[in-house]
Amino acid sequence: MEVEPMLMRTDPFREFDRLAQHLAAGAAGTWSKPAAMPMDAYRSGQEFVVSFDLPGVDPEAIEIDVERNVLTVKAERRPIAEKDVQVQVSERPLGVFSRQLFLGDTLDTERISADYDAGVLTLRIPVAEQAKPRRIAVRADRPQEIQS
Image 1 (tube, rainbow, N blue to C red):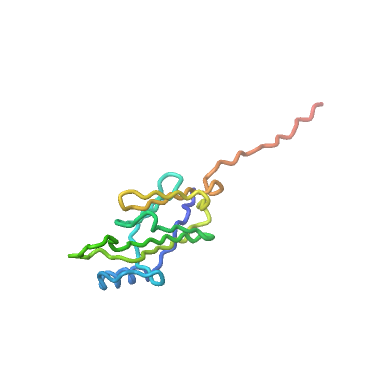
Image 2: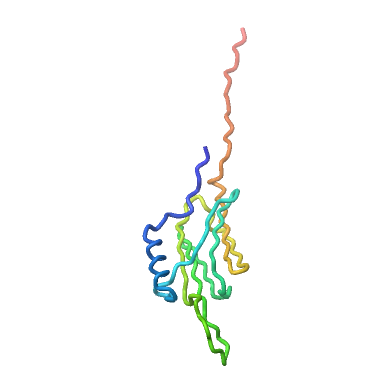
């Protein structure tokens, strides 16, 4: 029986935070109180894949940190910095976005990879070698026969 590595513990209040931010429509996150970012997480073979929606975020404005078993992703969507721009409509939230994942001990945090394409940040977290199922060989010591 294979034991599934734990990717994260859920935060029961995360959905309340997300609802409050949705109702505040347009309230930007700050570094001290970042807004939530949507994500998907799933297992694919011998790795976990976590994808975050970060459209319009410059890859240079994304920070990924791992300390012990806590993975933190922070990103900042900045306003248009061009001169002589008159914004007509601004509905996309600006500011800081963050998400923390509590990784199980069965994941290899030393080999996490990160790719950013089409506004989606994808992290791949391999299952640690010691957590992968393996077969144990059984030895049988047979008593030697007594010769008469």
